[in-house]
Image (cartoon, rainbow, N blue to C red):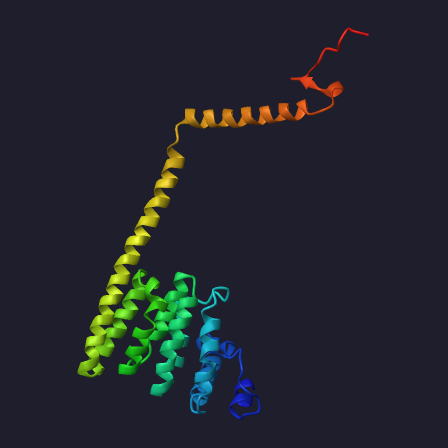
Length: 248
């Protein structure tokens, strides 16, 4: 019913189309078939599919949704195959680069990089990728993300003109440099964390006991200081009342 209402312009498509996108991977072949048909027909309605694509990507990349990675790729793979206009693909390169910059988990990096790999890169798309390099440079240490970007450049190398191949080679060099630097930084962080954990586990028992006694002694001194600030009639020295003066 929902697909009928949308495709017949009885309901405007704004958001939450991602819920229909999830049905592409439904176990019921009738439901998955209707979902495929819906997006196939939606792609024929001008920019309708392109306009809702950011919402679909955002929703499916949400870690709280918990969609399996392979299911994500099946759904996105089908939807991206329906985006054929060059201008839409060029705009998607920039949009996805910016979205990649905003992601925080490794899984999200892979998801967005996979989306980029589905696009057909012409010369203008490569330039968009180069112009937005800063958006994803710090993600290239992740092996699969790096492989996706190398695959993009390899595919583009086959279709672009000769003058654009120099740009691809330059971009590939920048990617390699960022990848190696990121891997090196990641190794340093991991080694530091490992060394810290190892130090905690290997502290001698005697040192641990001394540290515990020092904490206990500090606590006793603090307690005695607190007692010393009480009224003289109520002060105690380690549990023994102070002697009162014999003078009258």
